[in-house]
Length: 247
Image 1 (spheres, rainbow, N blue to C red):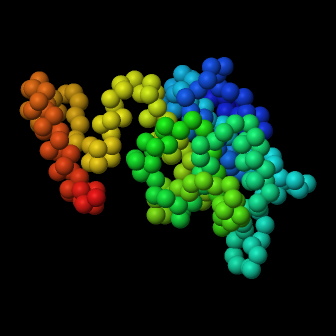
Image 2: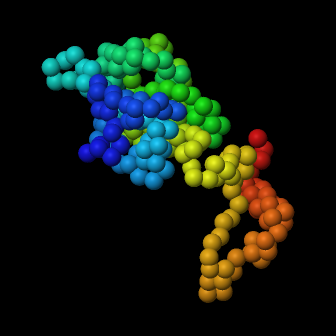
Image 3: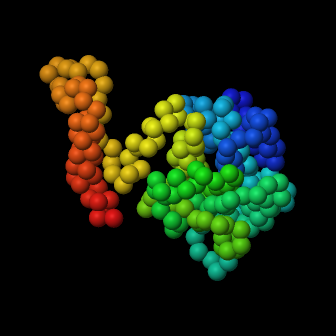
């Protein structure tokens, strides 16, 4: 299932390549099957194949001590919903930390720091990070107090678990690693990198049923093109995300 990526499940964490990689991401989850697709295509697959990034998936249930590999229990004090237990998560994190140093141990949670391009840029400079995917009503607070170094949210909404958030974050971070993108300048022109949204883009044909590409883009005048792109970026940001200009 994971042959193309050589993702390591459970406690078996084999390197993707013999040579040292630029970044390693360890994802802790109770649903490892969710990650069968996100890293096996396009830019992520290429980054892993080049040895510029490693992604290792760990099933938290493999660290559970109970016969039935339980990872959740009722909350002290009552209330609806289950809570992820402290023991399996703590043992998994501590086992990983016994193998290598981690720059960040990140819990994906709705009440965390808002993930944005600045955070992605910062994390792309790290060597080893752990992403802990929450579920149910959350994780035992003692994990957050003693083992988590950073808490991140991908938006002001709730999803069923942290797996999709982990995939989104990993994609956003890995594509920033030098050598991942074929054109090194591509990431620099992405939306949010300079505090603006990206300007409109076009490709051939120049005239499609009367829908025409702006003449300036066909002029070959590099200076005029850059001015046009800058103006359009500001215009689009002002229209769609005025809060960014305010910041």
